[in-house]
Each structure stands twice: as structure tokens, then as C-alpha cells.
Length: 143
Image (cartoon, rainbow, N blue to C red):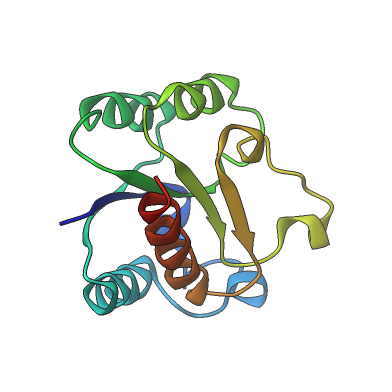
């Protein structure tokens, strides 16, 4: 079975508590329930982690090498200013899809992670995770 690591980045533990006007009222637990439902629908297995520490995310990416087929990364606060994280994503032996609930570009932000990822999805709300899972299945089946 296809296994996908889902990394919820910096500040996502505060979803539904802050910046509701930008990200909506859903909490991280809500996001994760949706991700799990989408994964079940697609017949893939997901491991979901959240961290506010870039070094922890880097360690996780290294630890799952050879154990996952792909990753989905919602960087949250890691979107800008973390070149070590972008380098770790680029070095990972599996494709990573960046997901944003909102559209950072609409707020004048360009992701520093996007160039290291296979693709990026933004602005579709929690459904962006579903789109990422569908895209990953297509990428992997094309191999």
C-alpha cells in the first residue's frame, strides 16, 4: 500500500484559534480527520506529524527515507526563511507536494519551500490535501 507522510508545519497547531479570517475555523485535528478520510478514499496510508521546530521536521524526513513513497507538507510558518528545511525536502528520495489552505501569494508571500517540492497546491482549503493525494497517486503510477 502506498504510504505518505503528511507534515503539518509551524503554527498549524493554532489553526481554528488564530487568523480565522485567513484560514477559517477548522482546527489541526479537523484537518487531520479530513486527511485521514481522503487517504482512506484513495486507498493510501498516511502518517501525520506536526512540528513547530524545523530540525524536527528535517529529522523526520530523514527517518522515513525508504519507508514512505511521498510526502505532503503544509509548511505554515516555515513558508519563508528556512533554507535548511528546503534543502532537506530537495534531498529527500521521494516527491513532496506543498499544500496551503489559503493562497500565500494573495497575501504577497512566495514560498521558499515550493522550489524544493514536486508541486504546490494553494487556496483550496482542506480539499488541497485531497488534491495532493490524488496528484501523488498519479505521480507514483507514472513511474
